[in-house]
Image (tube, rainbow, N blue to C red; front, side):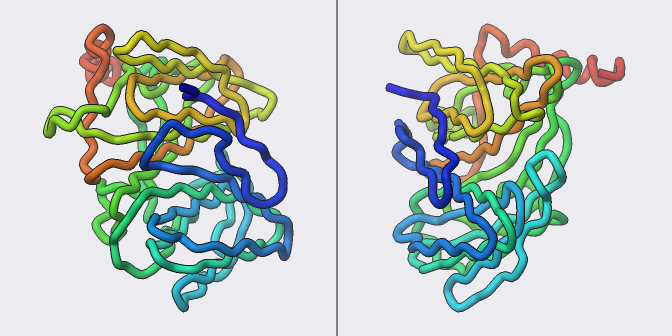
Length: 272
């Protein structure tokens, strides 16, 4: 089974060449000025996250003009558009635009809506050399007016030399409130773009893989533990999105490294 892959970055829709996940899917849409992409959501909800550029969206009789604005993922909070199941939609580029299309099965009957940067919460997780920064785009945390059936979506920025998703955690067993089952996909970007990071994936069935993160690579996590580190001199970004039977997040740290979480309050007191 392949857990890591690289996406093509040609014009139009670039799908994952392989995907072990049964719930989640992902595509990278690249349009030049004036180009249009049309599709149907079918039985899936879609969150379109503008990675860079602007576009106009039409869906279910609604039109959202000039959605976007940041030139790339490292230049501010994103604009996003939620597209419910069962609608036709069209996206028209205003200049070059890159859009991440995340999706999961849904039976939720709601109207399309835009998530603007002021609605995206931000902050930092961890401390010291495992401190990283996040944007919560479509989560339950402080966002009660953004309905979704399964999708939970955000962005993480891991500074030069730092670790992220650390301690490594999993979310593969339905055992609330301790752990919730969710698949997850990471889509990576790197700044400067010729840089790299490393992603470690492993599970309880003897699988362990370490993958070189570069621009437009992805990790697909149907189960198992995962963690990320940025090479010195480079910042890694990943768009993360989860999907399960509910939208309550609960993770289980790797027992071998979970103790590191308990050091965070002390490290913060020391200025870490």
